[in-house]
Image (cartoon, rainbow, N blue to C red):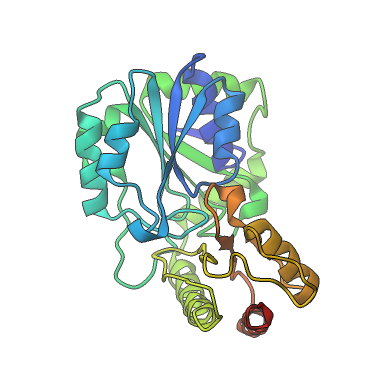
Amino acid sequence: MTVGTGGKQILYNALMATLNPGDEVIIPAPYWVSYPDMVLLAGGTPVVIEAGMDNGYRITPEQLEQAITPRTKWVILNSPSNPTGAGYGADHLRGLADVLLRHPDVWVLADDIYEHLVFDDFRFATIAQVEPALKSRTLTMNGVSKAYAMTGWQIGYGAAPEALIKAMGKLQSQSTSNPCSISQYAALAALTGQQDYIATSRLAFQRRRDLVVAGLNTCPGIICPKPEGRLRLPSIRDLIGKATANGITIENDEIFATELLNETGVAVVFGAAFGLSPHFRISYATSDEVLADAVARIRGFCRSLR
């Protein structure tokens, strides 16, 4: 196991330790914004597979099979996903694992940072658990930022075969050196202490998710599926081509986000930043009152479009 200054540092160290020029990394879209850039910085080539709303924001085994080439080195699986909240259950992972078993040179990077923030009857699973034969070529990454609300402490950790961990450790020692001891002891206390907080936090986030999803689905032109995890990426495909009261045409999700901010003061992130348009990302890590107000403003903005 290796510990790093945040989960994304773990991911980047693995890419830097393994990629050669021309190596490909498969990334399902929507993706966390830095995944493709980290691949490029490490000398690899991002290969993006679109996992759209119609597929529950999950890639299919057929899509994965078609994307793999002799140059494929890694597949990144983030479940539950940031930004969509979509989770790969054991059945979904079983199909992907069957594909990967046919390609023994392809490694898997499982970004499990949202493991504990899942809702309803969804059951978290990770690919090395579903298919133990993949354990010898899987890096499982996690951290304390999300479940324990310790984002500023910057502690992530990864488990993988010893040779990869040693290579990642060499890179770590020459870059960020080591997470500070205070953060490490705080993370140890979080991971080994009472876990009651997680259930309480999960229920609060589930309540906020339900509030936001229900509210957004009353906004004309917005489609917001209910995600398995904490985040979401609603579609605005039915608003494309409409115009604001000021005569500005909503040509894409970036313009939507900009005009929404200008007219209502509500800040969202446009979906193109995460590799999928026309969508936008909304976070509900705030009070119910603030969320209800924000949804009402979004609804008013959508109703004003012509």
